[in-house]
Image 1 (cartoon, rainbow, N blue to C red):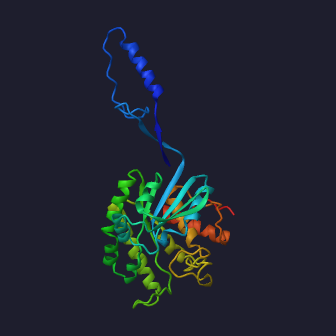
Image 2: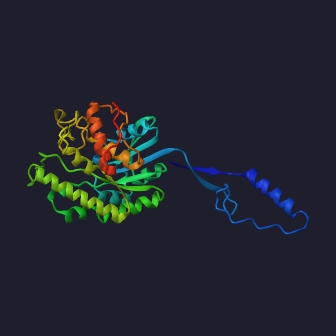
Image 3: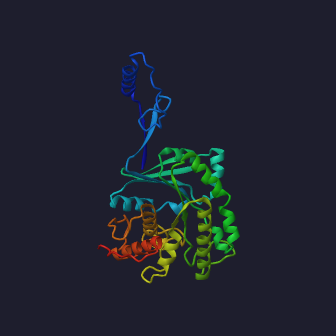
Length: 328
């Protein structure tokens, strides 16, 4: 929401010169100028000052992989419908873990797709570097997240080791480029039951899903607390939604994958995973209730389902029951 404005006040300098002349023209000594802070447009040494002004735009940058990608447009829609001007951007590389972000930054590699959603729609720049994206705008909020496949092993130590010290190093990089941005940890979600990869784990059962969720939850809170990051509790909202009989374990269902069944781990559109994530982000960042927000996503969701997902997001973020009715 900040904007850098360069102010050159030659007229003010001329006025100051005349004022000094008026005060010291009778032979008296002129007073030394008071030490300034730059708020008046002139730095203490008389040079051009930089003034930060709030331009009313909320600029959000998500650094990660596909787990912070699909709901960006929905988040923009919720913000816009609530009357907030925003920019929602992704630093994206499929499956990218924290360690690779740090390595690519250190090597100066430009491997990312940089997506931006704003009033002009959604556009992308190919072959961008992390440094380029961090310096592209005056970001208000920047998030990081991990690829939490290690949590499927039900080994919390392995999961934590996948996050640190890489998270510490990435946070230091971000703060060097964007010292005024609020940094967030995006807590992702456990995989859907039935998910299977070509390994010895086998299909995900309810027990494995619950353990993966608990591991992600505990590790996320520990990392966020240690690095002073705001927690965005999407994983908590997912688990709450799964226990709701009107939602169930269907949040990964997607009209573009596997005949609408989805792939059992990405946030789906028609399943409501994308919309739920956007609602959690909206409430966490704005402090406003998402309950009653009339934004409709481009894909098909019933209003009843949207109402339920709004309520779950609200209760997850605030820990309270929604106290207002949902508009239909």
